[in-house]
Amino acid sequence: MQEAQFSLRILHILLYSMSDSNTTDVTNPSTFILMGIPGLEAAHAWISIPFCTMYIIAILGNFTILFIVKMELSLHGPMYYFLCMLAITDLVMSTSILPKMLSIFWFNSREINFNACLTQLYFIHCFSVIESGILVAMALDRYVAICDPLRHSTILTNPVVAKIALAVVLRGSMLVLPYPFLLKQWPYCRTNIIPQPYCTHIAVVKLACADIRVSSYYGLFVQFWVMGLDVIFIVISYTQILRAIFCLPTKDARLKTFGTCISHLCAILVVYIPGLFLSLTFRFHQNVPLHFHGLIANMYLLMPPMLNPIIYGVRTKQIRDRLLRLFTHKEA
Image (cartoon, rainbow, N blue to C red; front, side, top):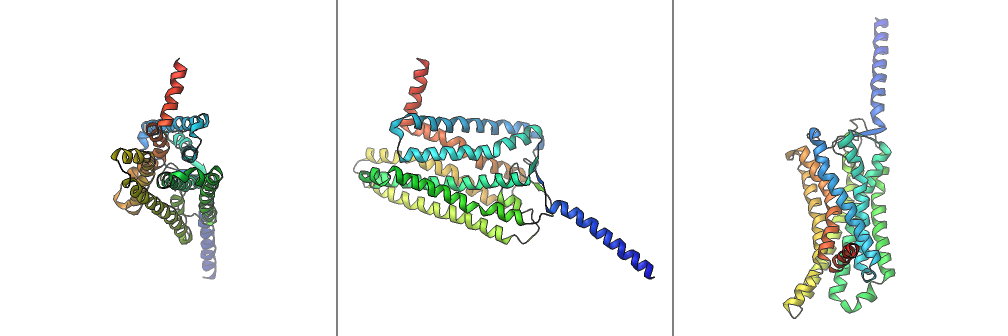
């Protein structure tokens, strides 16, 4: 009887050690598996065509904005400096996700190193926060230009613009910095499969098998701190801008002044509306097909880099004229 109990005890220890070793492999994953767009794996090659096209347009458009602003001395002002920051942010944002995404769609290369995943999600979230901050800085520029035009050049001097830019970059870098450090300390014993083509904070947090409230609460804090305060500041700025516009004596003056804000308002809508829609789909994901959620998440990160240079290229007369002169000179 004692021998039987001893044998059962040894068997129990062996089984426990085997299960523990299997769990350890997943607890400290060396790689994650990116699934692309679940449910549409057969169409990945076709889906890659519009995404690749959007990436090419984003690269060409944002580099064109940077080139024109650099070459045209009349564009060396606060609004266009912030526009250049927006272009650089869009370039980094799209480049941080598209190459890996296309490798999944074209070559079925789904694996991503754990540290590379953390790096990717840091860049995605960091530059999302920076982009929101740039939109706030541009709202400040429009507010000063319309509400206090005589002091615009003395208020937003180059040193002030540089300090605002530095503050925007530092805010994004520091607020998102805890993300990878928190994620690195959690154990991962559920799975290493991420049901989308790139790494995000919420996607990796869901794979942890520990008390992840610190990561979740901090993620919510960053989201509300950034989106909430930035949107409030933009709304307050445009409330004052609209009051100043309606005080102008003629309709033509009101339309002309409001026209200087159209590009910025379009950029705000392009960034915030998809973000709000994506946040709602996360909250009510049980009613949203997984492939639809994946497509919306991709569009949220890829549309602003593609549309922002088009918006500013079409709506901003100085950029449009410089671009036309560039092509006309080449043809001549």
